[in-house]
Length: 243
Image 1 (tube, rainbow, N blue to C red):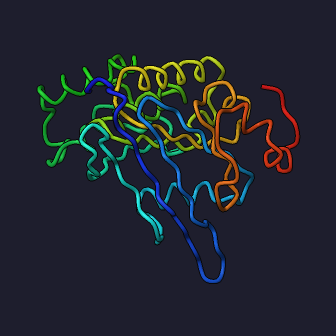
Image 2 (cartoon, helix red, strand yellow; image 1 turned 90 degrees about the vertical axis):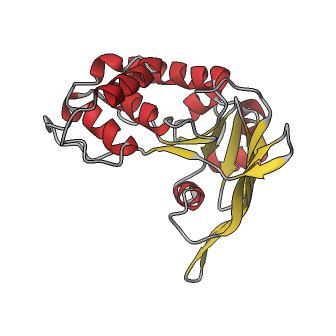
């Protein structure tokens, strides 16, 4: 992965989503700079999941998403990595981490033959996230924290401009959560990508976010965790919390 330069920005411009007569999102605009973790919060029904689906192109919407290279002042086609909240994994399923990873980056059926070159390439990338020892392990035997390491590894090959994380620590124990945010810190500091994380956990948002977006069909408040959590708009929706 390339080193971060601090000169890139993902721009989410005037995203609106209407389903039938219901306006789900209204003119949502967010700028996410590389080396920055932006956490989106909001009550149930605020439109957080719909916004992610719009960014990923999974729901019809107006507005656009662009990746701007500020060094050259050019908008380029955006590359997005995505880690879902959960994937359906059966316990002890025979598919290995290598099988799943290779199926995402190869154009030939991975069950035909294990490619030594691809195997080493995957192992080297997993190593960035402390997951290289998992390459031959069955997906169904991974812990929640191990699976998240693997999913983030897959989502960042090739290196995306924007990494989207949907409730990524749901079901993970405290040690796994700490490990996860160490990985995010590494991605922020060393690699050139913007990161959006959707979370219901306000304490974690306050602890780790560089910027918080309070969403309620539109952007109600944005700023540092302290600025957002101390705002009247936040207190109307969540009351008062300590950060």
